[in-house]
Amino acid sequence: MVQISTADINKQLGLDSTGDATKLLDAEENNETSTIISALAGIGSGLFKIPEGIVSLGATIMDLGGDTNKAAEVEKFFAKINPFDELAEKTTAGKLTEIITNLAVPGGFAFKAGTNLAKSAIMAKQSGKYLDLGGDAAKAINIASAIFANQMTLDGRISKEILTSYLEKIGQIETQYKSKKQKGNYIETTKFLARSYWQVEPTTAISLIKQNLIALNEGRNPLFGPLFEKAFRSKYSKGGSVLEHLSTLSKKEMTKVLEQDTELAAAFAAAKLVTKLGEVTSPDTTEV
Image (cartoon, rainbow, N blue to C red; front, side, top):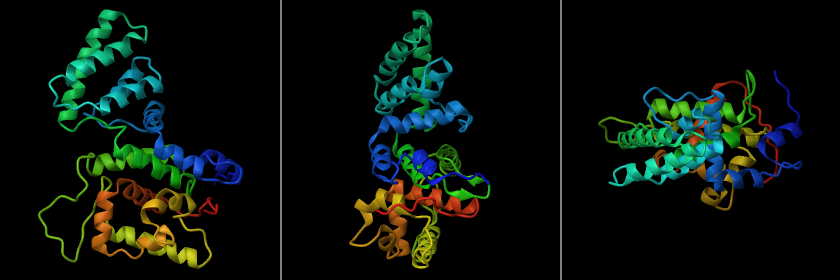
């Protein structure tokens, strides 16, 4: 197995030498550009393959020679575009032409490429086939992968980039990021079905919480450690730990939380994935 020192782990997690989690999670939560660049870097490196039929302007800009910063600029701009606005295509085409021209592409080609790309991107967004790198799912994946990066699996410690790639693919396969509720005609009374883009079962979330509370009570490092507490303390800490508060939720309450809180749902999806990938030993022993 790959062995990494505590100092190396802190460095990769974005912590200082004392393991202070503040810098990491503040950056992950507040920097939209960082979220988009992280996703684009995964695409550029080949860690994340864009599914067939899905459109990404950022990836296209990189194919034309742009760097991740230029690609992120386009994604941030397009994230704010209403695809059903009558001026959406014209506005997008203008921005794309400007960006492509700055890549030293001849003006005539830049205009034509910008116009064609804008049309395809607007159509993709209208039909739900645009890869959203700047929305709530992307931010949630970035936070979840930061929390659980460097957990030990059977193949060594899992990197943030690989964890991000897995979560992106799971969401695309499960829901294509179009819904957060398991499809079907049913009335939930005692059995509550999967929620979130990653289709996390409420019973799975509750089971993970119980397992981690047992580990904590036995003096072992829980998977839901200090970084998890830091990320969700403001939402779920009611005088105790986040883990303790979540353990009091009923299946019905957990179902509602998973549907409404995309970031927490992504965290549970990541925790489930890491648990399945093998033996879990937390490298994060920072006090919060």
